[in-house]
Image (spheres, rainbow, N blue to C red):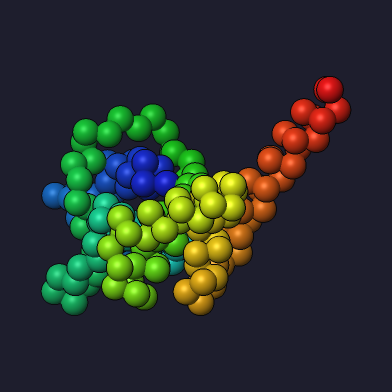
Length: 170
């Protein structure tokens, strides 16, 4: 699951105040700080995920200046109020939107067309949009990775619990 854009911005704003200059901070310094056991203590894989999400959300970019890599922020970190070291939080993915993007990339259909297809599957089969999106992905041969499958499982579990409680209250 990706990190939430808000928590990434808060983290970058926090570090910018300590190690940044003109919206740039030395990449190796940023990485050493988030890996420090006295700070966030991320593992190498988690750092890669954080950097990927920062670039994916266009919050920042990795640029090379005079042979050194920097993290350039695409927002004004002074506008974000941060009191202390913020916690990184994961974002719950929107399965239909993610599937629509992937189907659109694979087929060349517009996002609007794919979302309409997902909604049609949901209404025809009388299932939630997350399930319809998974069926649509399968139709086009798109595999969903474990975090997305977990979201689907959680939504099915909630539906099952709701129906069970409705049946026992009758």
